[in-house]
Image (cartoon, rainbow, N blue to C red; front, side, top):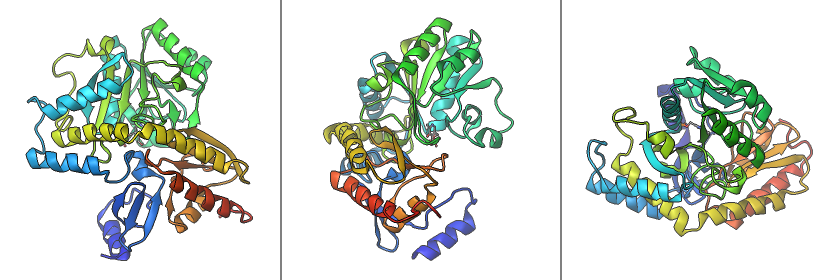
Length: 397
Ligand SMILES: Cc1ncc(COP(=O)(O)O)c(C=O)c1O
């Protein structure tokens, strides 16, 4: 089918809820995708922060194919070798105190379960989240999302959600108290425009939570699974080694096979009893095979190292470029802040066959490439962006 036919059919038969680029992706390998028209694009958006191992990594594809041939699915009513391996592997790379996993299907579901566990562990209801944070679109997660219009479109909201200012410990102290079940945050606020906080902020949050008996949740749906050049933001120097009580994960965890997870410490997991949590598809064999292979591929190909190198190369390559005010983020979660709107740059990059992303900050262009993005691929972006920005008024529409 050619692009026009594909677009017309999608538009006719789907609810018009996504702003799409005018390409139809047909296949992918590594950092590249090919369209229905046979054009090749450099994907620096990583399939929406999902394809950490690159598109169709051979190790992941082989594991999924082999698993599909054995058994696609059985629920948690039975034991499974591949689920055992996924849980063991995930816990083995997690910060030391987070020694149990709960599998689900998406980021929003991981956050719903994280908040539920926090309420069960504390017997309290209030949840503190942050201005600019995004946690998903199901009822509790969207109520915890104080970014843009999301809470409004999620009305009526789940009661008990309050917000504080990201990076400002005094504002957290003003709302967190002995009625608070959890403080939940994206350690780097991706959708808000790749906003960062100081390591000291995480240390202060840990102290506050310990003092008041509050569960600390890191929503690592974007920052987890190697994205920042660390397996997790939690426990890394970025967080001053702070370990939260729960980490929520999704996106990269299955290289594109839908899967989410919560990593939980003993203090919280010990209060969860039979049938307190559950989901039919969570921990299914196909998803678990994808998790094992994804983590193995990241390890085998030293993708934590390549994510860190990509950031360094990008920062050096773009230093001094006119109209770029700042580069935010870590590893393969990068926000390039322009002094004007980034949409024209996004469009020009697409004309040059490079896929990038925008954010809710109109001036911040987001890069979420595969962790294995190669030096020549980063250089291609640097060269094209330098070329685009040398044109007068490049950020003008
Ligand atoms: C930080 C964060 N949390 C949660 C979610 C929700 O994940 P999902 O779309 O898998 O439900 C997202 C999605 O973009 C996210 O970026």
